[in-house]
Amino acid sequence: MGGLKAVAVITGGDNSVKGSLHFIQQANGVTQVRGKILGLKPGPHGFHIHALGDTTNGCNSTGPHFNPLNKDHGAPWDDARHAGDLGNIVAGQDGVAEVSVEDKNIPLSGQHSILGRAVVIHADSDDLGRGNHELSKTTGNAGARVGCDELDQLVIASVWVNVLDRNTHVFCFVILQVLLGFNLPCKAIYQVPLYFVQHAYTS
Ligand SMILES: [Cu+2]
Ligand SMILES: [Zn+2]
Image (tube, rainbow, N blue to C red):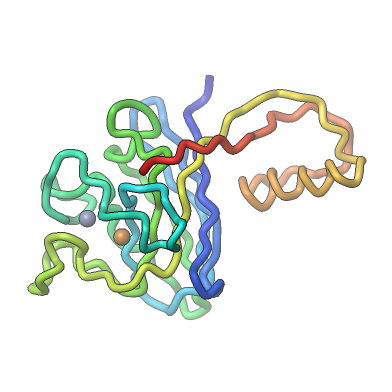
């Protein structure tokens, strides 16, 4: 059995921010986060796991930073940090941020699992608890929440897919290439591990 996987399809309230993120839990307990976010203003943006997988009121209903150990806000490399403190992602002049993060405080299983919680991207830089702003020790003063999604587990089932069939082809393309970022061809009948999104809403 491979590592647990989760996916988040990032959207923002005004639809300018979008992207996808894949979370893979390694055997050593470290969770890898990979993906790409588009439509950001150039520069650093606070990047966190928030406590609630609730997006009924956009990113504002995702609650505070995920903080099961009741610590202050900090940098990813601090001992005193929220589990959800993943620091900043940095967008280039084209507004694209390539995300590549590894962190041992965001497991996809167990008591402090982040499944069903939310990943959030902010308008501004996270000061990592080091600013003198009144919000430094709670949010890093990272400003508005410009993109988010609930973290859904990807469940694997190996099935035969006729990807020549028109509907299945679209399905194959969306699941394999858009959501997962796999560059697999969708033009043959073959057996693929199909990933189903399993909602694990946490509120
Ligand atoms: Cu946040
Ligand atoms: Zn925090």
